Image (cartoon, rainbow, N blue to C red; front, side, top):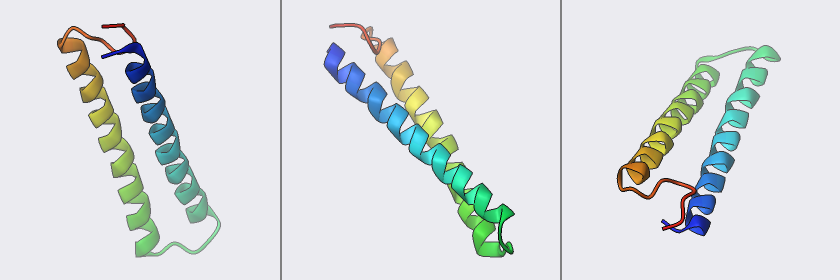
Amino acid sequence: MRQIESQNLMEYILFEMTRLEQDVQQLRQNLRYRDVDVVDCMELMLALERLVVFKQFSGNVIQLLKLRGNSVGEPS
């Protein structure tokens, strides 16, 4: 993987992780300031699950790239 591709991948991962974390934070704040119902809890649960799955997926992608001998950040 070329360095620019590695950089783009890492920027994408950082952007998505930040966005997903902000979604979780916003939903948690919503629960504090209004009456909680089942839908609110489900939205938070789904947001947390999306964040966990994305972290696992991005970690797996980085590991796979390292196994190929072209670790992220190294020029090929």
